[in-house]
Structures are given as structure tokens and as C-alpha cells.
Length: 166
Image (cartoon, rainbow, N blue to C red):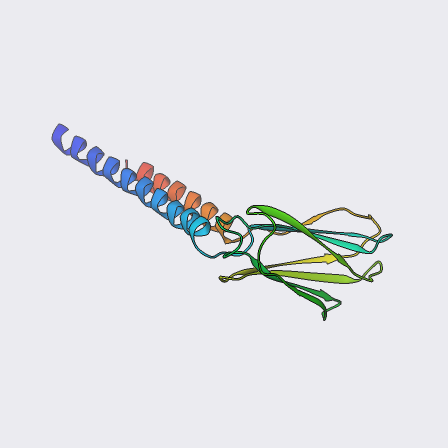
């Protein structure tokens, strides 16, 4: 009887260890490709100053060589109509940088900004011009957050099932 209990506990330990290894592997698949290969900007914020009519677009796009891997295009739509397209041949900084655009906008106008990587991937953020002059709007978290939350829920579910079997 004692041998069967130990065997069952060893199986549970191996199953739990495999789950941890699988989650680490999944995390590596998410993190490593984003730093090595082409990817969309990891974050982007915009702010608009009504007085100066400046749209500040802050982009975070971490790359090892900003002359070969960079944000090559920033498209701006005002009220769903193309307003400006700017193209670039490099990125000013390998991590984070800000572009400033003159936009004639008023309170209530909707501004869509899309930043595109030369090697693939883009990120879009929408901002509605409000009277709170110059406050930043942050983009929503990407798929990485959803995958991490799903993985945590999966592990907790497996642990519950293992406890019920005991």
C-alpha cells in the first residue's frame, strides 16, 4: 500500500514538473522572438496640445540596430480620414523615441496613429481630443498579457484537479 502512494505522489510531482517546464517554454516562446526578430512597437502613447497643435507620438520599439530594424512608417488619421503619412529610413534611438506632428484638430476629433516596423508588425492607438491638454493616452496591453493570464489559469486548474484526486 505504501509503494502505491509513493508511486502516485511521484506521478503527481512529475506531472507538476512537466507543467512548470511547459510554462517556462511557453514564456520563452513569447519573450525571445519579440527581442530577436521583427516585431511591432511594444508600446505607444500619444498626447495632443490644443494650443500648439502638436501631436506627440512616443514609440517604444527595442532593436539592436536601428538602421536595419526600425519604425519605417507612421500613419495618422483624423476622424477616419488619412491625414499624414511619414516614412523613415532609420529609428532615432534603439529603444524609445518621440515624433512630433503638426495636426489641426479640435476637441472631439478622433486621431488614429499607426506605427509600422520595416520587418513586419504594427501598432495602432486611438485618441479623442479632449480639453485635458497634453495628457497621454496609453495603448492597451497586447496578446502577451492574455497568454500569461491563460497560462496561470491553466496551472491553477490543474492544481485543483490534482487536489481533488487526493
